Image (cartoon, rainbow, N blue to C red; front, side, top):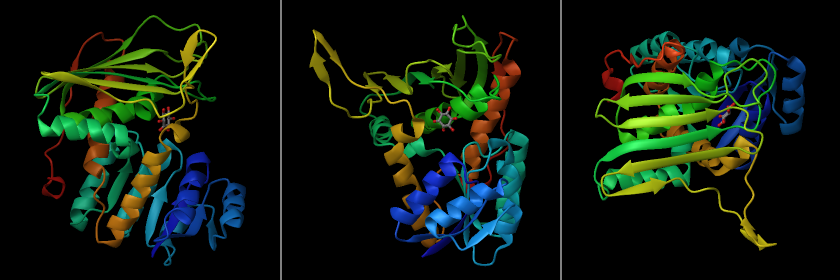
Amino acid sequence: MLKIGVIGCGAIGKEHIRRLMHLIPEAQVVACADYFYEAAQKTAELYGITHVFKTGEELIDCPEVEAIVITSSDASHAQYVLPAVKAGKQVFCEKPLAQSAADCEEIIREEVKHGQRLVQVGFMRRYDPGYAEMKRIIDSGELGEPLMIHACHRNVSQGEGFQTEMGITNVAIHELDICRWLLNDEYKNAQVLKVKQSALSNKGYDNPQIVLLETMNGSRIDVEVQVADGYGYDIQCQVVCEKGTLNLPDPASVVKRSCASSSFPIMTDWAQRFISAYDIELKDWVLNVLNGAPKGPSAWDGYAACVAADVLNQSRGTEQFLPVSMMDKPELYK
Ligand code: ISE
């Protein structure tokens, strides 16, 4: 049994607690924390969690907590991952690992010092059956070399406080991970373009944006990022290979034929769209940690995505590709 503490009792935090408590018999949530103490108390009551804290630091220090799930706000991730790694505890951190590549480097240095993997990043799309099958076919070599990826990431709307940069660090960060994973490649250069703006984006942030990437092996990637499309949560990905193309399937749903049209519903909630990926991901993390070490996306993967995100945000307005440069990869991640 893995005894887990969860830092952050917002929507995704509660979803992960429900998963850990109800779907994963090998896991038990023994502690939770939230800056809004009331949210932590309510969550603890709902799930019968013994230890309730106001700060993540107290939760990390709790002797009963063996492993930590971080689902607090993006900006606070690194501030909890670092002490957890220093304490030698296993950490599952929601994406992004940090707000900058520099913060990820600090986490990597600490983990390398520990000499063993302690961090998994919540890039759950790697566990989505659609993406996993695309990866299997690419790796089999059946379609020859991958040449290009055309992707789009569309959200219905954004809450207060959303900013242009978050279109990369919070939204497109998924594509920054999944594309390098699908291609087994790293990025060489990157730029983000502000294109014709949607009338739905009247709240001060860019929408849409287009992310362009070139990889070390010469593949090209374009990602349309719409953070307020007003119609649905729509994730598309097409990999163009030498001998064929691969398309990410839409989630299975009934196709309705009626009134001279054929249609299927599009979800609006990202947590529902990838619900099975989240389920598989957390179970995989718990079982591998119990077996000694996590096998999913590492701190290095979290770092690689953040390096590209930093470069993209620096490129905004320059209309130029900027080089993506990474530190040497430590042995631990090879
Ligand atoms: C959210 O955190 C996600 O992970 C979703 O996949 C993404 O579409 C959304 O924009 C993020 O806020």
